[in-house]
Length: 467
Ligand SMILES: [Zn+2]
Image: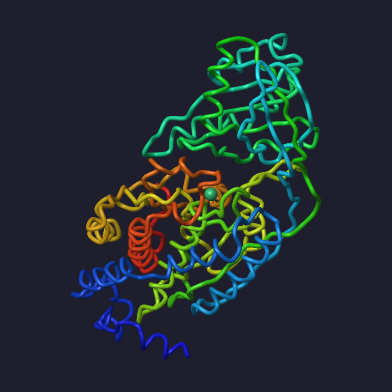
């Protein structure tokens, strides 16, 4: 069956190298072969089918939920059917959090309903109090306990739209730490402007520091944050917050794994990844069904070539990326479970990568390899038709889940995407299939496919050793 599948692949690819696989990327037809792989990737429908099926069959996939579990089992079967080796869903224990039912409303001067979502990992309660409103997080941080005691703290800072996503990265402490900082100074609740750039009335949720002490904490939809700000400038505002959000007990999540066995057992492996779980409001199409589809479709294109890559390629769909764990407080439970389970796996990992940067086009590949070495020269030539530049420098942060593997000393490579629109749908109800531009999806698949082939086939014993 394997032979039949391979025979169906376009045999013009790497034909000259079949007799001597070691010469696969050094032969005279290299440029042509890479061109074929890139062009095939641009018209391949695998990624779209994957993200469409994932988001349609399972909808939202909160970490540890029945939908995330069902999606993981489907994922392992799908990867097996696609011809990958060693496909499996590897379970790990997880405490689950649910948003419950909730509302936030202005009580006075006149009743108005607010669009909110509870911050992930917080525990709800019902309170009514006057608002202490701050235009920025810095102003909130500088507030005295007297200014906050008995009040609902409200932080209205907006994030700017940026191509590199730095507007979000700089503001993430507002969501991660704000509720706890408000509680510590005697506030009775916390509201923040959701970390999004959309105009629509949907609130951008996401993880805060896990907390089992009841303290209602919400993100506001950006238009609702602006409304509250205008009202607060006119006089005192009284709010009522109520939520049943909280920790619901022990469950299981899974990492879905599969491989393309490399042809050189002595060569270190490459790991490519994305995360399967999502927040509950949308269907996790952009975050991170897009990433799942891109890395899987790119790996499938490489798998279907007539020559196996020199290095083993491991595909991982991480579970439970989004919500932190309470006891002990921890992030990236799936990546931690993977690192523990595969610490001594052979071959060891040479490089890790992750696609979890929205649904924008790839702008740049960063990899720690010699500036004028073969690998970088080949990557530049293969990626430039896609509008992707190559930076011969290892990225400091490769991605959220793989930060766990990077912390053990394994270097990353990264395909940086245009993040200009990422925070229009990030962790809100707009994160659905229609938010994905099929052309940008194809461009991602093509960039990943040629990068994956060239990196995994590199003759360099350790192409991305830190230097
Ligand atoms: Zn994500």
